[in-house]
Image (cartoon, rainbow, N blue to C red; front, side, top):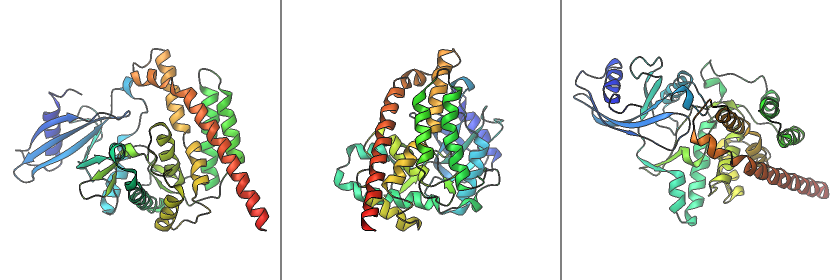
Amino acid sequence: MDLAEMPGRLERLLRANGEPEDVRVTDVTPIVGGYSLVMASFTATSSSGGSRTLVLRADPPADAALAPTDRAREWELLSALTARGDMPMPAARMADLTGEHLGRPGIVLDFVDGTQLHSHLASADPSAYPDLSAALAESIASVHAVGEAALPPSFERPGSWDAYIDELIARWRGIEATHAERDPFIRWVAGWLDANRPPPAPLTLVHGEFQAYNVILNATGGLDIVDWEFAHIGDPRTDLGWFQQVAAFSPPDLIGADPLAFCERYCKASGLSPEVVNPLTIGYFSILGAADAIGSLLQGIAAMANGENHLITSAYLTSAVAFTHRLWREGVLGLEAAMAAVTAQMEAAQ
């Protein structure tokens, strides 16, 4: 992103979306830390709107896209959710889906004045975790309450819950089948997932990358969820499992701090039963939902080896492969033992 050009480009976009001719853009500041998009905050000042801070989310260069996503699809969702007025997220304001003004497809959102939840947890006293965990459960439950019927027509609707799970398990097998080298461990995980499916849950809006890095503790003490490019229709436990998957690499784990309390609060907020949402079913989805992430990771490593990308991220993530093998093996064996214990307790009670 050429910082010298961006104020003028953003001013043209703002004018094309109704801002007055005297609008001026200053303080364009790159936002670092994400892997998939080019992001920057900026200040827009005009005679009609005063001064406000906004955020640009734009496509990266093709050879620097770790996990390519679609700005038009993201805009369609965020503009629909903004119109609802009840989502814990920054409002979507405008888009340049052809790159006419920005030089690349991009969208503009409100800026959330607050602290990233992960950064806050790193310095917070653990005594604050219960309240934060409860707020987290309620925030993501409000997302899952949207339901698939309210989502844009372009969002693919799985034929059924089983079809959705079949597809996720097939992604695990597909990753191993198409990777540059064989990885029998991935086939082993896929087989275990297929044999240990949990009770079904209603399909709904799923954020797709729900983690402490994508949650902002705002100025009023509420939680706003950002970075929606991987949103889709699916099982809501995919989000809960992904939160724990990321926390395994980058603790603390706000769900795992007291998983029973989190599940109780989430069930109360969502209306789902404890049979459907509990620490074991979340654990299952923490493994199942990692297919796309591990697939992108392995594709990036292969592309780096073939000279097709220059991302230092891909080089860094080579060390994550063996680590994830160990995490998934420990997770699978732990879940298996816990499931067996629950079954034994139920049989004894009968």
